[in-house]
Amino acid sequence: MSSTEIIEPAAIEVENLTVSYGSKPALLDVSLTIKKGLLVGVIGPNGAGKSTLIKAILGFVKRDVGVVRIQGIPAEKAKGLAAYVPQRGTVDWDFPVCVKEVAMMGRYGHIPWYRNPGKQDWKMVNEALEMVRMTEFSDRQIGQLSGGQQQRVFMARALAQSSEILLLDEPFAGVDAATERAILDVLDRARSSGRTLVVVHHDLTTAAEYFDRLILIKQRLFAYGKPEAVLDENLLSEVYEGRLRVFSNIKNTQKNSNSQAFS
Ligand code: ADP
Ligand code: MG
Image: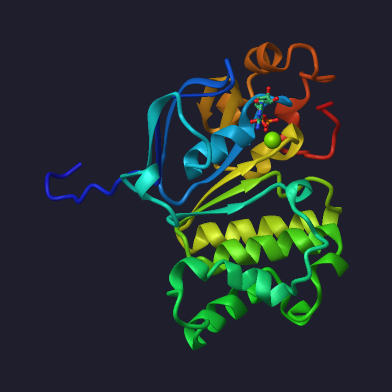
């Protein structure tokens, strides 16, 4: 490294993070640094604290101990720097609102209270809907969409926020194969535009193919690094405790992702 190089802050820094609900820690002493421009998967069994990690990075849950920084700024002051795509099951779809209105919610942090969305806001909403290929559904009620379409609208809302950092909680859960490809394509293009993405993912068979880095957690951080290092048989058996049906094929599935390796 030359001495004149400007050192950019990491996209996300987590230091000694502990988060508890009541007396039970969901995350314990987690530290990791995510560099800008990476597509990072978060893996671990049910209840491992994956959603809690995302929420802690967003500053949505109270930390017992630890520091979170977004682009060098403490999480509590970094509101709006990171955009969030919640898990689909946690959203009320009967709410009477159409696709473009949901996407416009991503602009709210940028629009002063005394004015309506402007031309620039609509331009960004339209670009976001285009990026997730939902333009033709702009006026459709959100409750009338398929699960995969709803997921893409939520991604559009996050993209319209024009944040450098996107955090997505299980975007692939319950979508069909075509939608999975479409969502992956959006993630790839968001990364190509220089964004940093952190994605909770439950399918180990596709984890190596989809992500640049993997975070393996179960309350504690077990590993963070390149998929081939994290998808280690011993590590996985320790973290999943026999809940993995097939260990031996995980390595192979990095090339051939259609075999069953996770239950
Ligand atoms: P994951 O997303 O990996 O399934 P979570 O982060 O949702 O895990 O949950 C981690 C742990 O914290 C689990 O034991 C879960 O039951 C608990 N937990 C999560 N949210 C709450 C909450 N709001 N109140 C109490 N316990 C919670
Ligand atoms: Mg979760």
